[in-house]
Length: 446
Image (cartoon, rainbow, N blue to C red; front, top):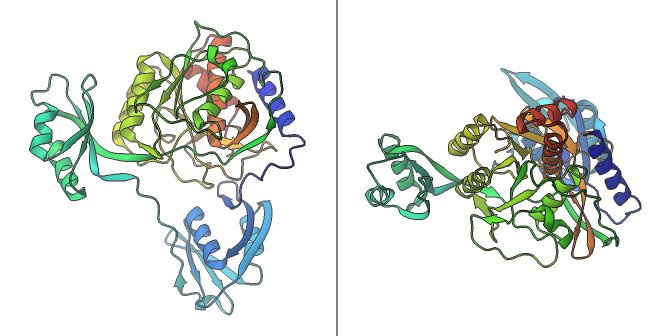
């Protein structure tokens, strides 16, 4: 395990050295509440924008004196909250208190009682698709999905008769809500839930840094064809030829996809990152495309992808994705697979703070946050209490004759998944034992 980690970190350091053209990790505000540390890299933010961000990442109620304005440009790392506030607010005054468990921040020019205007935090994204439901029928159900859909006035837009899993579309949200109540008492239905959109995984940074070296970027050993299969539930993949022998035939649950011609897909970056983390003990990787050419996917498609990976024997399963609603059906699916020994590894998310992210926060999932170049928590990374481990957030990718750098908690997740599979090969552990060891040896910041 240590050999793999040192190899990857050394490779990343060599790749990054001298690359002055690379952008910084993020341009924003990261508030690490548990550590009482704040990072900021802000250029020409208005005061309302800053205060909205503070409210969003801390959960504080923020009040400002009407008519107060200002432009903020500041850069710092690892400052305590009070010192950070002083740097952020500059010449303005502030006062903090806690009443009935609610933390409040008052920002003012004159006196604290003048801070009467409440700052509205940016609303959280509603991932629910209002006019869709996901339905699972009981085995040997006496009522067919076609009959149910007709009774409910729904259209079946996706179906998996083998699993008894279906995606229903309704005329509007209120009709879907009424149908959900009806399905809850239907004896033919095992489960019913809203369908949620799932953001397409986007790295914090994906940058080309020049032509690839003539030698392969990774010194990979031959694949262990009898070792664990790593399931990569992600976008489509299009890796260079030298990686093909480590890859099983990809599965798509969303049909064909149109590959980008100007940069590697997210799945390609994660495939190479998994392999880089398994360099001395590589297993075969099974890519499962759940996005196709869409800007997002749904929990129905991600569940289909997970089932396809599990049924093909994949374990562990890498979910370098996040940004979805709290789907009880996906949670149940993951829990059921975890009870059978399947290990899921998922990204905590690239929004700094402690907000719960799904599917990373579900039981049975090892949630991964990212470290920066200094080995500390990366400024862009979520480090909520659900996070179980931390790994480097940057890795090199070779594509179309170019070398790229990919940064984010997705990368950290792929590194962790590869390390788990490597431990399975090297120390003959099962996936859950290897994940437990990985989490113990690489704990998150606490």
